[in-house]
Length: 505
Image 1 (cartoon, one colour):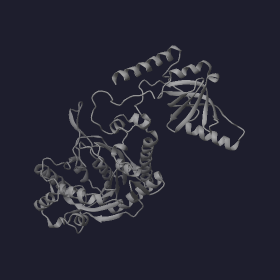
Image 2 (cartoon, rainbow, N blue to C red):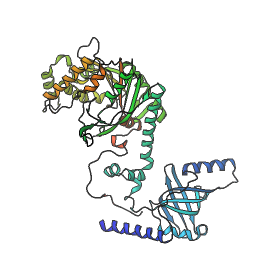
Image 3 (cartoon, rainbow, N blue to C red):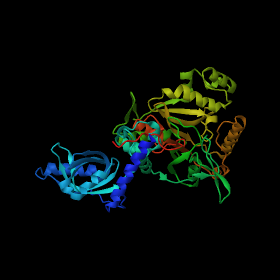
Image 4 (cartoon, one colour):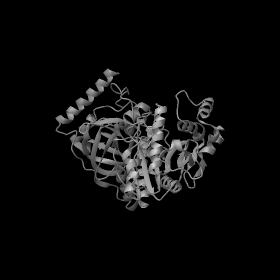
């Protein structure tokens, strides 16, 4: 295997040397394209339709990666692919003269620029009839074996560039859709009067969520800092400062496990609106997600496996307490902490590690309720111990005005009517510290003194929202794993080179 790969690399190096010996630069600084391949094809077809006697689109320059070579002696056909599509190139010795000799030094994977006329061949294919060739990048590594359908998951995620080359038609549209989703969120919020802002990524207190942070050190300040786990407390400072509607779309970092819908760094939307509550936010989420689904897919319906998910409003609204009782038989009001832990253990929940009541409820919710939430659903009114930043629900002691939105059994949004009483907020943070003392392995929300000081200057009633962009894209693109919607998912560092077999095919 190693010997064969060495031979292929040596073969490419020899071709590179010949190209340079012939006075050609195999890595030019620029190459001007008249059009991308899709635009050129469309213009040619439009010209055919409007002027059937005109058989050519003349003297155009196109460029792309060579994806196939069919050598026929004094002529050859190449396929050139760019981001817009594929076009065929016809190389003829009588047109290219001495330039035709370049063919022997071209390989699949090379980037090539072609100047010529667009024609339709007798086989009916739109083709550029080459008059001049320019190597725009000589590729030194052969593409993977069977690269036309690279399937090895590890290679696809670890070397995303190979995945894009090999599976462009399947993979690239997912990331185009992702970009449209983010653009759609911005447009939706901007149209509603929200202001996009930036808040710190390096923070002195990792607060705003129950998550373990990444730790770093600032040399000049000689201070320990953390990568943010949420943007919440900084955005609420802006509400306190006088902005009515703010949002941020950015990366957050949580030092946790990796699975189908978790990555240590992910893209989060958080928005905050003064004089709104979680009911207002529910309406906004329905409208936002259904609008974006229609924009990017042409419909509010999305097919995932054999399920059809419809994001059209209104979404179902259910009570956490009632749904948990319905699917597990557990009424939270009938169990104290010890009894709940015992019952959870009897029902298959791992209770070997001592955990707080809030953590147990979260596990019960994940196990017994979430798998049933296939159509978009808001789960309402969470126990206070699970939501230290949320406003108490009137008439429901021990519960707060919080919802999580689910679809296809996966959480996609989280919202509170934000707690704005600084005294109660301090007490909640102190309760979290006590939970941390009692349950050492549990992540809790950390006390941020500057935020508490800010709250003492007065925060109006506010509705907050967090949406995991990656999970939303998973649903709208019908992808089974978060790694399929991240261009560069987190992977364990690999020792040595790729084990993927190479080919000159």
